[in-house]
Image (cartoon, protein in one colour):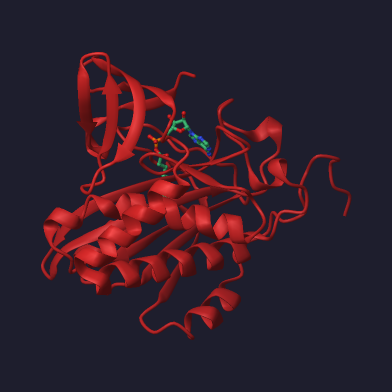
Length: 274
Ligand code: BT5
């Protein structure tokens, strides 16, 4: 087979047998692997409503209608990305839920770092490489189910996309950032394991677990110390220096008019301006 000069060889399907074998070592994990899904978050949401247990991973080789936040889209050519959604059923108090999207971003960045990439999180949970290029996006949604509230953890990671295939200029892929990117199955396994590890520690740790997560998150967050412009729903914006992430996971911004705090659910965009 001849490959185009810029095309990465790993365009085949995710290896379901390898994933299932790895999950067998982690109690409570199960896989639903789909060649195509509109959005894995939608499929996982239906499964959660139908009673799926914590630990179901719905992964797709291609998403035809991938979703971002606020009705934005998430676009990845077939076979070039890791796109999956994990069903969780957190037992932490409702007040701790806002940490979940941050926890996921932080642990995705950790997994990519362990795979040899210098990944950082832009608050709240975009995963960046090479300064400010987005390699992964995360969409955490809460869904009410007969068994109680569930969280759908949607993760999209650009793995083998070439520069020509990137949907936006601000994106990158693991393969562009560092030649010899790992295969998509390995990326999925590492990322799921890192999320699970961080989640279990957080859930088991109570307030101390959240405090530990906050400390670790702050020290790896690319946004702190930067001048930022935070766009708010309705067209308003805040500009100033991002100085902290508070105990509720909100970004603390020092503006000319004083200190402001913004929650992840209340922002349209956060952009560094320095
Ligand atoms: C996100 O939204 O970053 C969340 C993306 C979550 C995707 C996963 S894939 C599995 C699961 N199933 C789904 O349907 N979704 C989840 P947001 O912060 O709103 O960013 C969306 C913006 O990122 C778009 O408006 C584009 O500007 C940009 N974008 C789109 N596709 C991208 C890509 N592949 N890489 C980098 N940036 C992209």
